[in-house]
Image (cartoon, rainbow, N blue to C red; front, side, top):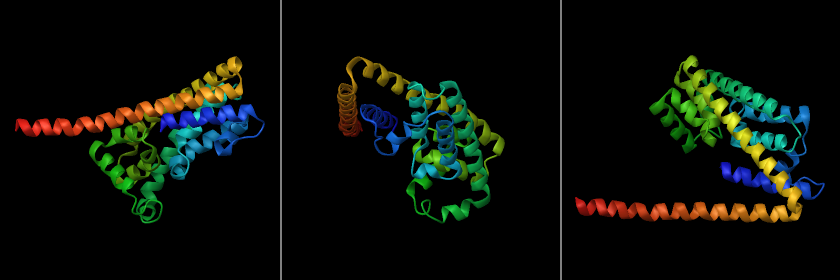
Length: 235
């Protein structure tokens, strides 16, 4: 998810800088500056769990965009990090209270009803308790629903808040810095080779990295049956 998000943002950044027109939703966000950018990114980071916006737009996308804007000198990096961290922690706290008061009703309606990921997230929380809140921060679907499930499951708020805060800081700082690096990297490429060459370089890099991940995953799947067969032979 992180690699694909960064890749899409690189392409959107390159295209939007190659013309005066934004490219889709992500491209349009790259034209925000100052207070509007802080407000939009902060709202999306907050609303992911508080309003379940994460079902439609992962918060990590908004946060990486905030970092990209900082890399392009359209916002201040330090202030963007503070806003993201505070809004992420506050949003999850609201999600916790919503789950505590209205959890069963929410689970009985879409998009939660019958969603297998809800069962997996509930099992994760039941198995690991508080640390699952920290782990869930870095899992797209879990990040949106685990605060509400924690509130509904009776996890103490003090425990929830501690792991929520740690996860919020790590997630907010990490993803904003990722976006910042993306923005600075593209800016450097653009100055040296021009917009269309930058698009070509970014595209080739994304395809190459994707092919590498596909090869590693396929190789891992082929190795696993071999190991199982060898274990059976030993038995």
